Image (cartoon, rainbow, N blue to C red; front, side, top):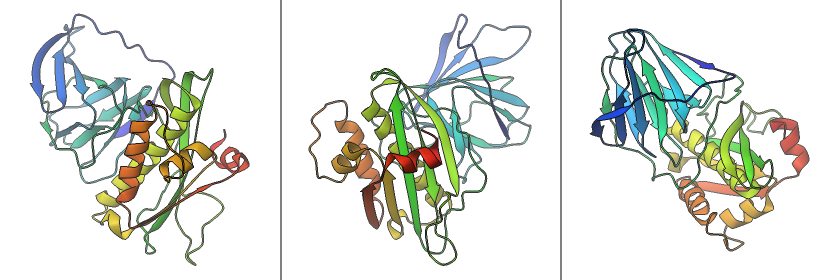
Amino acid sequence: MQVLSLTQQQSRVIQSSATWQAEGVHARSLRNLAGLDLRLLEIAPAGELTSPAISSDRCYYVLAGSGVIGKPGAAGEPFALGNVAALTQGESFFIRNIGDGPLQVLFIRGAEEGTIAKETLPPAQPAAKKQPAAAKAGAVIPNDSFRCMIWFDGGSTGNPGPSYGSYAIFVPDAGGNWPSEPAQVIGRLDFGRGTNNEAEYKALLAGLEDVTQRIEAAGQPVAKWQIEVRGDSDLVIKQVGGEWQVKKDTLRPLTDRAQTLLRRFGKRDLKWHSRTNSVRVLGH
């Protein structure tokens, strides 16, 4: 499986019509173009498409939304606007929607639609999240200490306007200490139109969901783990930690989602850190 990032991608769908409906996934056949078999998949929030070994080579193009793609049993990797996944005959895969809106995926030369798997996390709340991640190699989760830390940051151009975010995953070194550099950085997730605070929340949620999925993919109980969260948004840290009330209706479901994910961990620690830290590691 190879996932590529495109600089530009058209999202126009020509003469689509509904053909079947299943749990969380809506498929549309498209007009045959140049002899290609085209189909548009719409995966609902928290829905998941899984497939056994595919019978032919195919490509999946993300037209809208945010999700993850990978081999069954693995954590997967970000799969959002600007990504193309090239699969070869015999591969099995899953695509999971981790946003709050439909994940629209166009596939070419597909043969079977796969089966639908039940979600393993609480349904995602409004947080139209991820876009392609510029990831560093080798985030090692789990580890013997059963500890991890995430840094998050988000922003908006115009407030509200086009919003974005990123997060970093840290794991302890051999001595149990936090290193100065993260094990992995997931960069530049595009969230669509939103405010600075909404983008901060969505970056935090993206990080929490990623770490949770990695732990579960390793067959470990999340409740055995300790997580530390660091961000330069005092509002997000204190609202999620219960110190401040959530007054804006648009932030309440994001707070609830973050608290739900954090409660799955055995121990939790949320602290504010300076913007200097965010800029050094995340670049914004």
